[in-house]
Amino acid sequence: MQQRSVAGHIKRLLQHSAVYGIGHIVTRSLGFLLLPLYTNTIPTDEFGKAALLFSFLAIMNVIYGYGMDVAFLRYVALQDDVRKQRTLFSTGLISLLVTSLLFSLILMLF
Image (tube, rainbow, N blue to C red; front, side, top):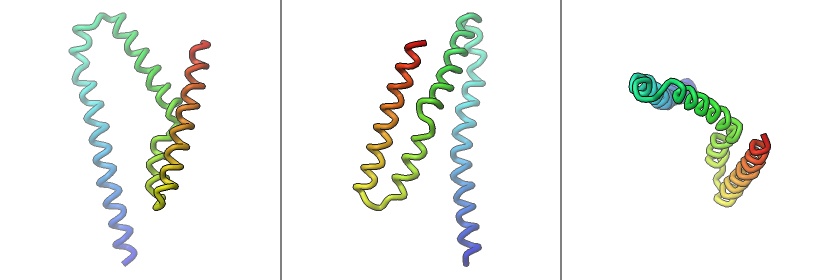
């Protein structure tokens, strides 16, 4: 009985992973397929600036979010009490807001 339960959980995990994986593959593939359009319409120096900007934004996305979005969903979903869910959500949102403002101020100094 427990093996079926574990097998069911593994099957569900694989299905969910496939959905997220396919979404990730589709977005990366679109970027790759649009590359000839970008290279023909955007000058090389502008393309380099855009690539540098996107790299910077990707790094800042990790720094600003620091995985809190996933943590929000996980811990809020585990709570049965609506008050605890609201408390967790508001605490996480406030912490993201405060740290984002601090990171932005530090970034403005440099």
